[in-house]
Length: 396
Image (cartoon, rainbow, N blue to C red; front, side, top):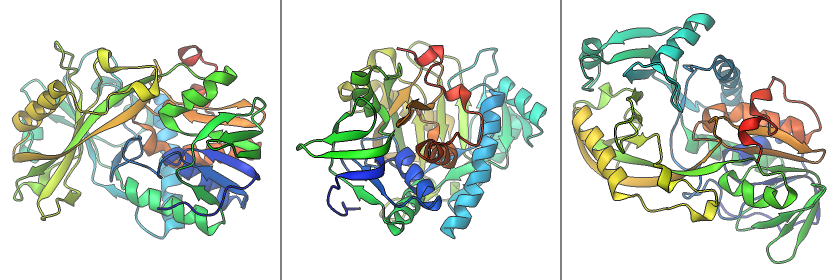
């Protein structure tokens, strides 16, 4: 993906950030017939040091929060529309297993009892499994007291294919997607942006969608939501080819013990190594407090040895057939204290998406549609008050 066009002096909409949120917004604007759009990316689209990099993300409706459950259902409806626009399958539906310990406390991914209660209330199909049923069905080694919920309609978003689809949609609409073009500041009234090198673009609307770096642009305007940056570890592991078809998409809930946060997740075999070996993606769903930072550029980018040890130990001890870790990535999660997003209009000409917390990609079509509506001076199609920038959890 390379930069296209020269920097214009004005545009109807300027989008800052070329990841999931910015590109989904651009695609949504294209489908609304808005052609005069410029998207600015400081590095490259969906680059490896940002949150939208990689081949897969989860989608599900299994939430402990009934509001997020309903919004996930709306996002899945929009995903189906997105696949019609793309003329291609953008998701793999293979189910999702929540399993592990059940206790009366919500984690950043919810809880097994909470998810079961919400799915019962909203009529979402699932299977309840005990430890022996889990181990008979999957190459997992659950402890005897573990319980599980399997949501058959969940699965994986093929995020790399989605990014390519949005880029194509935006470019075919005539949008300029300009890479290696850092924004240094936003005009006080939200009516334009200044670029590194001295250029300026006047805009009817500005959408800030640059992940953890949103804070740096919004702070001078007094509009930055209160967020932390968490460096999150994930990796690819090769697995036994005979077991490859049996790995589920899973999330394991365990209580925190010492420096082990207890929350792990993984995907089925959806790709292979360059030499053809089946691999799974797996990761840790917490960041130690000492690694959490307020300054985006202060985040560690090197995987800490202790986190690698914890992830390896879990994968090699709790799954059958895991062979070798072959790729390791640190992704920056932008986290609000209530682990919810910020998607809102900040001023008449300025809107933002931030605080994606590693969960945002499954909501991507809803995020893009909502940002496009805000940039069209409309309201989102659904109630997004839970993502308000004025709520207590994110007021600086």
